[in-house]
Image (cartoon, rainbow, N blue to C red):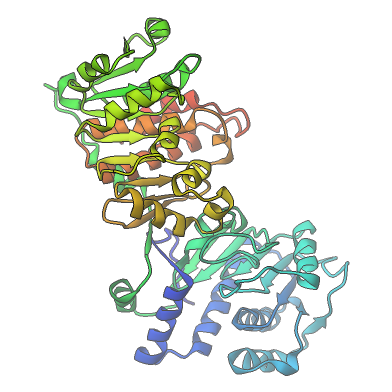
Length: 502
């Protein structure tokens, strides 16, 4: 049996890259496509048995292409193993050709139960195997296929998808009108990027990967020759190695000074959250530049953060001179005061984390710097690129590339499966975090985390990636009592824990 990589490797691939891997395996190493199909089916069946060891009645839903071939081979394996198997065929088998036809012919030698689609097709079934559509899907699913997927999702039966949940675009993670919501996905050769962002992350369930025993050197060839981006998953246990134990003679001056600029009338809380996050991840000093009317009130709730009244450019420039890194945007607003402060901040040569209202104002500018980290959510990204939010979400990887091309510095495109581009244009993804983060202030905390890491001397690219991971990891630790009702400030003790690795 091809081995599963239980740790899931860091690299994530596009559909085109996986196809190239398969082609190299076939042409250069003599591993036939049918051999790969059999290995994929064998691995999928073993995964099915591991997750549902008592399952006896198995329904395999098959479509047209190689994904259906995987399903036919799996069905034969299950029959040979003494299971009761029914195959729901959604195509005319007389039109099958190539590897799929061979797989179907092999299955036909058994006592398989072939079924047509009906409303009660999954009655008495223990597990549904989704072999309907594979990674080549690039159009909306309609008609009887749409109805069948809805029926699969409405069924109480658990499901395992082969390679990718049917209906998920393997490159973008977008749902093509409807998609299987799998409990487990058995995938092969390489992790598909659409499984880790947008809707693909939730639809894929638990992901199990096998390389199907193709040689390691094939992956090195794809990394060298691929014309498209290879995306890397962020791993906190690798990124946090920069967080060394502090020397006994350390003092606050060794760990930088974060200046948070924001908090217009009624919005001091946003600036306060960013400031406290910077302090909780280890910045030596943290200051807030905010409105005169409430500058003093911060000291009552968080006396460790210095609060300064700022109304003029000169007021702000004095604070910038003492700062190591600047966060601008949390609670900034869009007033003339906000525009003045942003213009003054962007004149400095310091690294800057730009979030929230500052991003909306940034869209009006023409000149940018590699020392600026931008952290837009999809709506802000749409304004920065002058397109609508729907287009951002249709292809988040393309949107990330467009943002990086325009702004040059590190980009964090927030959302389900947050994407990061570094100054070199390399792409990364964070598949941690949870729906509890859908509450006000989470973005303010993230901007403070990234700035707090930069203040301590961590490279801007590494700090951005580590900051995203710490933020998501803290949120995952904070939902012990449930996702609903999670607040941004709930992350603070968990951030402190995670930046002190044992």
